[in-house]
Image (cartoon, helix red, strand yellow):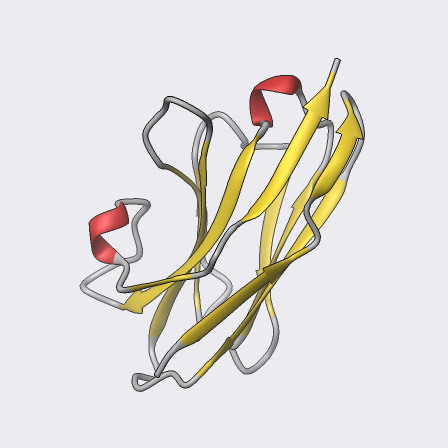
Length: 125
């Protein structure tokens, strides 16, 4: 069974940085889309960034381009999200997700089969 465990959330002031980690295990398919999503109170879950397990191709939501960087380990089991220049609107629970490659990796939640438990990121002004 696939398990995803996030860590690295916390509280930071605006302009600060945080790095999230997500350790995955139990994968049943080798070519995977790995992604970070976030959900703020009262809002829908939003895709933040995605990366392929077998390449360095990445895709970002417009709201985080130039500030956030997604990366993975060489095995494609662990992913990271480096978040710089954080703003109050980045406050949310951040989730990592995994799913098989269906053509290409997207930021659509329906394309991901497995989810972590989430980690809270709070940015104060």
